[in-house]
Image (cartoon, rainbow, N blue to C red; front, side, top):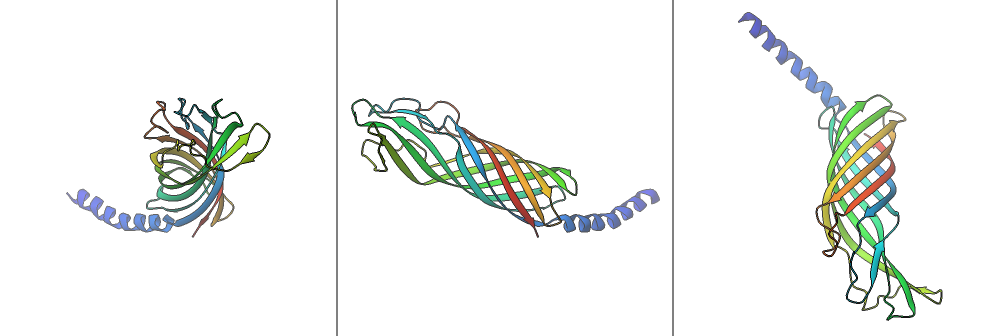
Length: 221
């Protein structure tokens, strides 16, 4: 009995110290990153009612700000506000003989929440595994039309219909590598993968995904 009481007393003495040490490591961080992304199955698969055939866009630009806080020694939620540009294209039907193809650029705003878990916590190098949730909202689009005579324009013709989701949500998994220059400032490298919970458009029966690679900076207060 005396042994049990002694152990409990020692735990009561140790726990406040452990919590104090943990709280010293619980710090707020602010980050910015930018990079490139590539969609998969981010376009309509079937010909639309106007005879347009669609195809995948190339690499697109993405950037974002994030705010994170260590709630324990190894775990931190990270909230991110992100802007992305993405494209898909389509070839015009032969009925419209003067038009060759059109590229549609979408402007997207993301509100994301990741849960970073520190698996390697060296003084200079840190590595996090980071699952999360992504939500994406379309804020605008620009159609650039290319004509057979070599000219182009950004007119919106009535035969061009919206072939993209106005909003979409998905799951993300990232690996965040951070190199610390000093106690407050560091560089980050974040490869990631998004899997969306619905298809890009109803006529597309394959999973909509995105691969990302971002470089950034992070300042810890």
